[in-house]
Length: 185
Length: 185
Image (tube, rainbow over all chains, first blue to last red; front, side):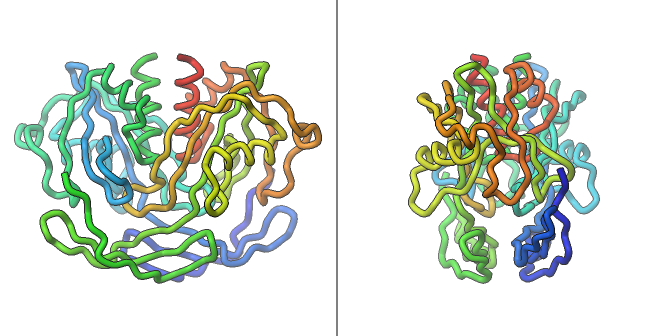
């Protein structure tokens, strides 16, 4: 099975580090050429569900621009340029919750959009998390634009949230279902 | 918890029905205004894992432009304008595999990207699937641009594929983990 071959890529729109749209010219395995295939260059990102040493699952209730109403969400954020995904996940967990964890289980890396790119999502489960920054662990972080409230779910509440589709963004649903599969195994 | 309010949206790039990029002007709950927030208008889509009446899980091995090498994949495709997600899922299952199923279990709808939009993914599990179009059920469909081979996985093979991260696109990983959770419950 042969991959498509990129013949050329031309940037057609740029919005800083968050989005570059390119037009690709692509050669299919049979020789056919496709022009103006839109491709999205977007930052890679991580998401993390962390289980505390007491067995609670850390997540947020929050608003999100692409979601109507509120949603539950894991820790998450864009990787910095050149940042290792695990290092970024540890950084975001600390920044957003004040917790650090000794055990990290990678749950895979995935293309955000199979046709258009849109960056790679790196998903993690962290276990044994303990407060490492007392100030942050007790309050909502203020550096993100969206409002969010830190929740500590029991395993049963986490299962119920997955089954009731409370994680309303694709990466979060994937992360939650994969983390739960690992926790319950 | 208050949502962000869209003050204006201006299309800045269009690529037919596949992609329109807009710049949004947004008012945050505290009154702060954010300008030039990139927003992606892309088609909604469905993904389906179908279990046959004999208990095999239908999926594809295929290439995908955003994935290096090959990946496993569920049935999937864009919804047509105004098409009901379940109707689209039935249509794609028949078009891509030749199968039809009597039992459909919705596994949720999710924003492709929580910040940028990018359409909504509707995920399904279908059960009891039987061949309804003998020609298609015996051969690879030819109307998609990417090469793909129809596989019939046992439940154990499906579990292993999820755990070995063989579904390498976010929507597919979410669909697989959620379908498996339902099948194994």
